[in-house]
Length: 154
Image 1 (cartoon, rainbow, N blue to C red):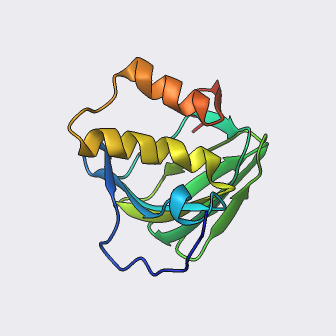
Image 2 (image 1 turned 60 degrees about the vertical axis):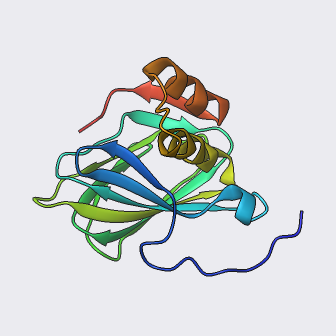
């Protein structure tokens, strides 16, 4: 596959609706980058959190653009404001929560892109008018290397 450089402009990219006020805009998709990286910008309302999970095949990076987010990576917990960059290595349980008082924005990256393919697949299904059932959503995540370790830790 020939991978070519390109620029993803503001407000450009397939949008995945993740709940009221919560979206993920896919900025760099796996097929565009030769599977090397997948990037999306997430808008997360206050209180948005993830379960404790890990990725078997991808490292994850989160860069806080706005708001306040708390990250748990392994046994470490850190609070980050804009400019904070969190590295979540593959195989290490992690979670995050918007602990601020307003919606925040985070740029997430997966390297290689495998874990990000789950976001791409769900976004394509939603865009086609066929949002996945809960069972299909879980199957998609597992197929792309996600593993749940526990409930949200915050």
